Image 1 (cartoon, one colour):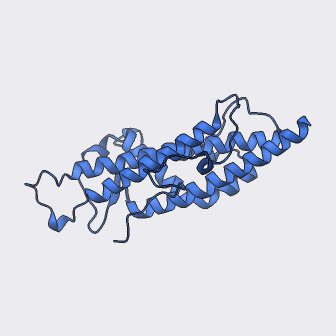
Image 2 (image 1 turned 45 degrees about the vertical axis):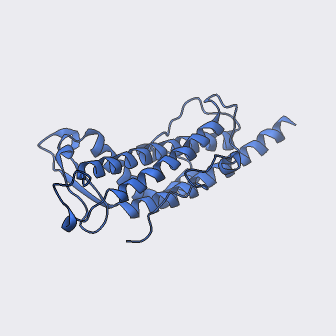
Image 3 (image 1 turned 30 degrees about the vertical axis):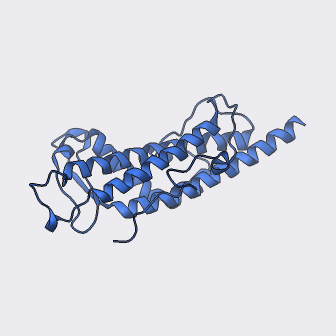
Length: 226
């Protein structure tokens, strides 16, 4: 197993947050201070990185598991993984929402009256070419993250699994659509490390692009107001 993966948010979890880390985002939008939203996203990644460390710290190879050792708690290990998945899904949805709002403001010079694209599932709808190009390279990650997070949240049969990766931390989920026994269960097995590494790439590329779009929007707004 290589070094513990981390989401690259431009800082270490224990470092103070700097506005320079976030970059410029509009502070006076009708949806509130988007700079503060960006800062919260960066800080959430700090918490995710700490939880990622807990996932690896609580992983015990099956051959070394001692059922009499209370410190070796598979369920606790699963809880940490589930928490990370939840926060990654929440952050992905927020970045998608932020990208949509900033993209509309950049292209039209006005804020949209509603956030029509605000989730991973929303990317399947009608979106601008710029947004499509931004998120298309990460479609596999986002699809898996969406399905696994939904299974954790909604699937009744997912909650009784006590399984652990045979060589390294693995995210397992068992999804049953609308909890109907007539549906075919879908089993997910995702390398935790690969998921974190893929999300780090997604996060860095998308957040960087959003800030670049915001800069374009500000330049257009200043030019039109002059």
